[in-house]
Image 1 (cartoon, rainbow, N blue to C red):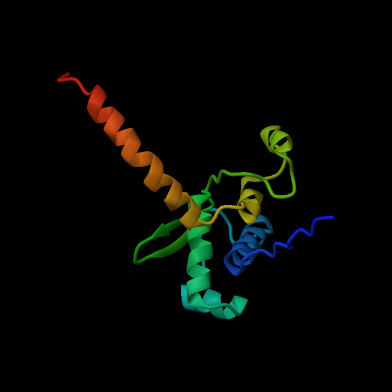
Image 2: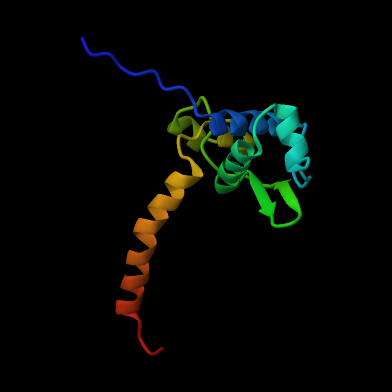
Length: 133
């Protein structure tokens, strides 16, 4: 008998899920700006750093657009996996894109690590294949 560890979602994942649910519920409508970071962190009773990581995760998943100096805006059209549904169900178009952001297993840092591996190789390949045209 092997004992499996219990995986509790990280705090930023729970924050991202909560914000995604607020968007799905219509509290934050597409095209609107989220409350200021300080206000949102106080409302959710979380640290600003955890909130920032959650907002970054939602941006990477296509749910939010973060504009430097302006704030976070709900994207008009989001993309990503749908929580609580299999990949086949998501491919069938079940659920909304806003629901998709809540359950991804990837953090923004996971995506950045993958990009650091793939992008230099892609650039090197492009450089080797380049022609004067």
